[in-house]
Image (cartoon, rainbow, N blue to C red):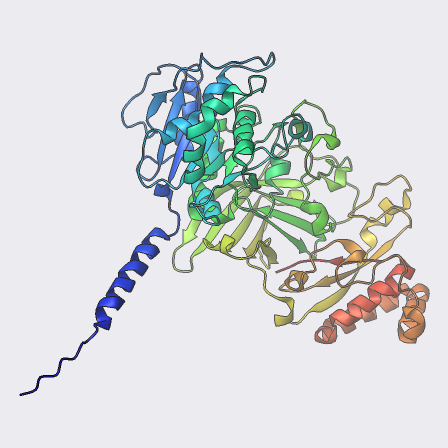
Length: 573
């Protein structure tokens, strides 16, 4: 009898091993969660009773991990909802020679290393902050998910003060605004930091010592503009009302600036901000810009914080720039002292915004839609002579917006908004959401005649409005308005030099000879302005779907420079 031996290879076993390996890798590669982050909070015993109230606003004991590091023993109570409090190690053996600073900078700079020495398990990121730093923790996690926690990362932001950045560094994260260090970098820092600190006795504080050690390790700052040091004084309306297109991660210097909501204490104002934060943290304080074409208003929505209504039409480029409602770190109204562009607070009484602050919110769970209300901040407004709708007739603004927790998984883009039709007196309703491409809907172009400002613009000393100068007794404004907004194809405002225009510098001024119909139209408009304006408005309304980008570009290059008309790209969703 002959036996044959056949070797059978079990592919099932190999697959099982691969599957297990993939499962392990997948488990290791899971998204960063709140439990993967540990906070190291710098505090002082002297200010603990006051500052711990700020920590209570954002810290959630059952979901987060953290340690408060103090310089001396403080009184603590159980079930306060605070992180455990620990006393920092002795730093008397470290040299310190800066005459303007304080030795506490050495202690605070070692908080990351001391947190690592606790040996906490499953830590991916160590986040440093002060006791007067308020974190939007969900947005912090959203930012950290962009980075590989297994690599060395040093993440934070700069000061708002240009001079502070010059005196210290434009490559340094400011600890008050908070910064994040990946765990491998934190471990490397812990091994060398004490020796590193000894080499820099002349440095001022903790941030520059940390930066010096990062430089020795060769790790640059990864800038995330949602961390806010807020080296400013005064009212934060200008900054929070025009927040950059980035998730709000932190606020700092709460004791220095005014309460972010009027008629509230600082703690009450921060607790008030947590109401919209819990509904849609990703969209908190994100700006949207839209226009009420019937009332000739520009509306800026800072979701969950404030709505501002301006008389007249302002470009998005202007409105997205923070107004200087604050002073710089040296208490001066010097616009050159900021590390970003700002615009002045207008002196024209007709251009002062009407501000509506967030009052309450609710969620329609069926539609996953938030409804936020904003009440007018009743302060005296100077008399305005412009013959146009007065925003002072409004008591509140209602904003509808769908929850969007994956907002920052897409390419950064400002949300669009649209003024909704409403018969309710004393209120305006606005819809905020993701911008839809302009080509999906018909674009209707209207010729709006702004005779309302004729009295203003006869005055040669009158200021400009949205870039228009007081050069003529009247001006015309050609406005491209759409239900979706021209934001969809990248046109977001900016006047006659918009992305689809030929500019207003006359570089394409020969277009009138190539297109005699436009020259004829220009001539008729000069001779019979009232009749031509009325007919044009009717024709464009009836046949708006025939009006395309090519014609808009052509008008910008030919007729508009000759007539001095400003082509405004108004982004209405």
